[in-house]
Structure formats: C-alpha cells, structure tokens
Amino acid sequence: MIEVSHLHKAFADKTVLNDVSATFREGHTNLIIGQSGSGKTVLMKTIVGLLQPDSGDIVYDGRSVATLTKRERIALHREMGMIFQGAALFDSLTTLENVMFPLDMFSRMTYRQRVQRAQECLDRVNLGDAANKYPSELSGGMQKRAAIARAIVMNPKYLFCDEPNSGLDPKTAVLIDDLLSELTREYHTTTIINTHDMHSVMTIGEQIVFIVKGRVEWTGNSASAANTDNAALNELLRASYVDARRP
Image 1 (cartoon, rainbow, N blue to C red):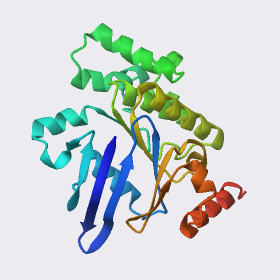
Image 2: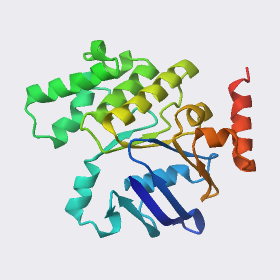
Image 3: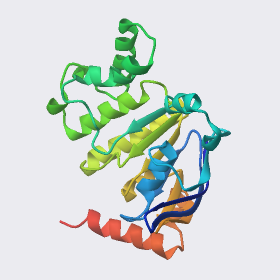
C-alpha cells in the first residue's frame, strides 16, 4: 500500500499539486485520471521519486520516504517496476536482452538464471517467440508487452504505468488492460496507472483518484464512477465516450 498525505508541488509560481492525499491499495489496480494539465503525471512522478514534493509525505507500507536514508531509498526503488508511455526499449538490444536489463544491473543471478527468468516473463506476456527480435520488429502492442515483462522481471512490490495504452488501437489496449489487471492479482502488487483511457477506468478501475487542477476531486471505483453525481467526472467520461466514437 502507498499513502500520500497533503502533497504540495509547485514550479516557480505555478502550483501543480495542492494538498493531495490518497491511498493506493496493494493487490489492486489504482488509476490516476484527469484532464491534460491536471497534475496527474506530476503526482505519479512525485510518488516514484522522480520529483521531490515541496511538502507532504509518501509512505510505502509504513516507510515514510522523508525519513529514509540514501541506501534505503535505493532499496525501495529496486522494489519498483515502471512501464513508460513509449515502452522505452533499447533499440540495440533484443527483446530478451531488454527484459534481462534490470537483472543485469541489479541482481546477483548467474547468466543462465537471468536468461531463464527473462524468458519466463516473456512467456507470461505471450511474447516467448519474440525473444530474439529487436524492438523495431515488434508492433506497438508487442513493445508494450515487452515493457511489461521488463517491469515485472524483478518481482516488484510496486508497479507504475504511465499511459500504458497510449498509441494503441482499442483491441490491443483492452489486452494490455487485462494483462495489467491479471499481473496485479498474480504478483499482489500495488499497481498505479496514470491514464486518460476511460475504458480502462470503467473496466479495471478498482481504485480511482480523479485530479482536477492539482486537487483530488473524487475517489472511488469503476462502479461508483458509472453512477457518480460529480459533474467534472461525468463531463470527462462523456467527452471520452464521444471522442472514442468520432470517425
């Protein structure tokens, strides 16, 4: 479980996060949603540690980030898996080598063990036959699945996904949603997904944090989102519904 309490973050004179508090549950798909510029990306980067909050606290399973030593912070980061918006695979490495990369950097496994673990993760995301292919030989959906395999190869406790469906066709986006949901339950991770995809919200949103202008406007799950009387959320859902059907 990850708890954020009264987070504030500003850039120059622009406040981006304004007293944000939320709880992200272990073993659940937790979604951060909001319009472009709402602060959802800054919130995720702050939780991950890519940005430092001006005030407030972030607590990972009882560990306050503010009180951790440098060594403890490094250990915490090794418990995290990250899926970037553009997959962020290394063009010069094969798919298997991309998945092995965190193991090469941080594990004490033998080479044979690293290969075996990476292959297991590729098999888990149905990319076992693509181990020797390079990213340029993979479709967008296959690249995202390779990125997911790399993110889970270290058995993370916390999985962060930045717009995992960006650039994908609707059918492939559903496959990615289903895969992330399955892996969250299977690994019992605390999964946080930053998304603008309202289909994801309505299908895998077990815990949803809706951000408007740097503040938490609403929290709930997919069932309560469908019946909410929150005007801003209804507008976002309605706009996404129209856009999805626009030729």
